[in-house]
Length: 261
Ligand SMILES: C[S@@+](CC[C@H](N)C(=O)[O-])C[C@H]1O[C@@H](n2cnc3c(N)ncnc32)[C@H](O)[C@@H]1O
Image 1 (tube, rainbow, N blue to C red):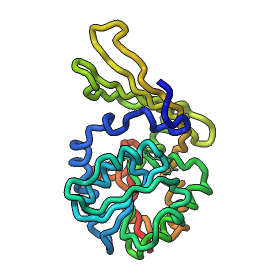
Image 2: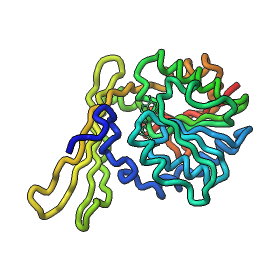
Image 3: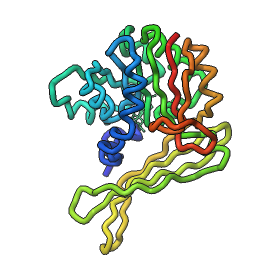
């Protein structure tokens, strides 16, 4: 099947169904509540919001949430699930590099989770995003950034992630989510997310549903902290995952808690 949005790597991946959202949100809730609990204003941004699960979670906690994502397909999916209590939840399509043109100033905090940041592959775009974000936030606003721990991935030359199996669309069918990486010079990675239909016992048991190439920049911790400071943020803490354990060379993720000065 041809993708509806050929240039959009997230079209066809059916991102919502690839993640065990209730479990993930339960795991992440304490850190999200700890960090966003310091927000001076309850209007917050979900940057690279994907299908909007974090946005809806925060909205249910009483935040006024604006989700931003470059992918038209993701925004369409996000808008298709309005909040149950009819509260304030807005989605905007656009790139983080031009965040200052997409949303007004005055937000009290922001999250940018799920390895969204590496989609900004150039230092200029990263700096522009941080500066634009700072201009949208009030003083004291917390920002939570979560990406994979590229210090680990680059140092070890890692090429794959654990395979994930999710219930499929039909009875007896599962969806396999496979993620491969091909290392390029300068910390660039050709990331290949792929979904396959798995029907054990049938021939062939595996069929490719979708596979994409996404060019990512594996930002190391040291490469992010300078541009954050230059844009007007103080880096308060670094965690190794969204459960709030300390960051180290071997942790799964890099999670930075920054605060707008
Ligand atoms: C892996 S998903 C993460 C979604 C969600 N935040 C999460 O934690 O699961 C990355 C998202 O970033 C979006 N994205 C990629 N490049 C972007 C850009 N330059 N500006 C805004 N969103 C972007 C993609 O469309 C995708 O929805």
